[in-house]
Length: 356
Image 1 (tube, rainbow, N blue to C red):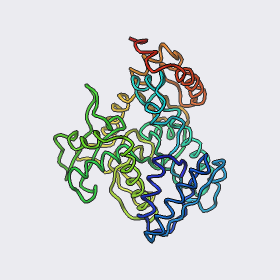
Image 2: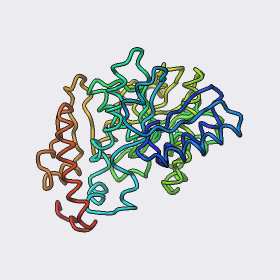
Image 3: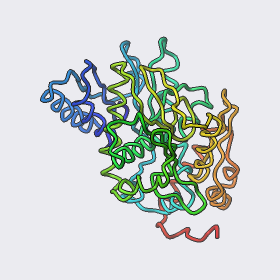
Image 4: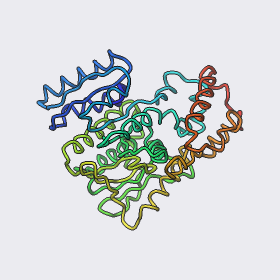
């Protein structure tokens, strides 16, 4: 487990009482106290629930924790761009993200997952990788860079759980939902709503199924996202088949209904739709979220920013306005990082109206 923040904690706390498979969870973070705190709470929950799950704190370099010989897989829950920054440290940078779309932060969301994926790629057999940091766009970027990723978690997983609850379904086997990170909120004018099917019949108003989730405080929603991730892990570790919904499966953009059996992951496509159509739906949603990633592998793909993000960048970082080749990710991250540092020092309203 890479990370000790709210999402990582929620996953550990649910996994502690759900998982009946003996497993050791290494919780890796930068702060010893936080890592120990997560492990104490999760470990105590596991003991009192009679579950064979151990939680061990790890503070230090990622290389050492990923070198463990018995490593099954890695969950990434850490990035250098906090989703809470707009609340805790509002600035011209967070205002820019609000106007341009969260996709502008893609390079920062990808850092930890890319580093972990590259370390895992050298191992035989290769442990699985699950990424919870903006997987709708980060996972396609990983795939374009030749870094295998099993899937993500969150986003469509949260939306599907919300729809399942609204419909009163015992599980998600009868539900098929197509949704992107952008659908966590009601989409803007001109952006298609998420699509849903129950028993192969289209749902007339999918937004109604998601209304309660969209009205709930985002911090509270981590309790659902973490629980759905723990359910995923429990099935993955036990080798139990699971019909669920995941973002970024095998590097695809956006979120899909899937069937998981061990590490075998396949799409559960809605009736009458093939993979090209469902991928195209999510690529259109990705543009509304501010970024798309060409999925050409071997570094030949390209990151493209949406119209709002490109317009903002034209006046702030012109070299990035047209996007960049995925092979230039490091230099693009550095340039965008310099812009972020500069805008963080400016008040939130400073750049309003710069780009018209």
